[in-house]
Amino acid sequence: MLSLEEVQRIAHLARIEVDAGAAAALQQELNGIFAMIEQMRAVDTSGVEPMSHPQDVVQRLREDRVTESDQHAKFQEVAPQVEEGLYLVPRVVE
Image (tube, rainbow, N blue to C red; front, side, top):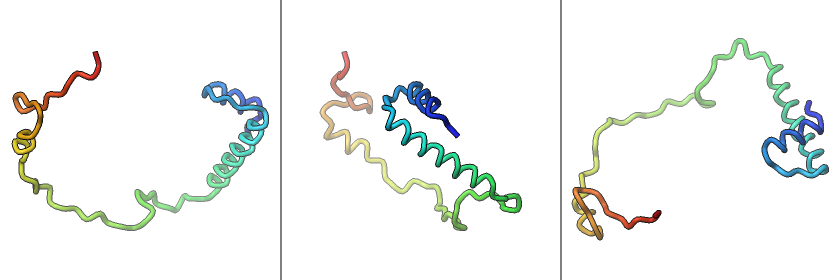
């Protein structure tokens, strides 16, 4: 469990300004989170297989092939400036 001094030190390291009242509330919240983590650690999961997804679903895959036609020439016809297939834009940063 975190002490009030530890909470204030963490806030200092994170460059977060926390007043005394907020630090006490934060201490209770963090200690509640740590208590919940300890409860979760206490559960015996030795017979449970790790899962990549909480639901038993299979992702449908589609064939990896190009379905769109190449239209870059059409798009570059309306561009203000194009050079060697690249769009030319004004310099933003000097």
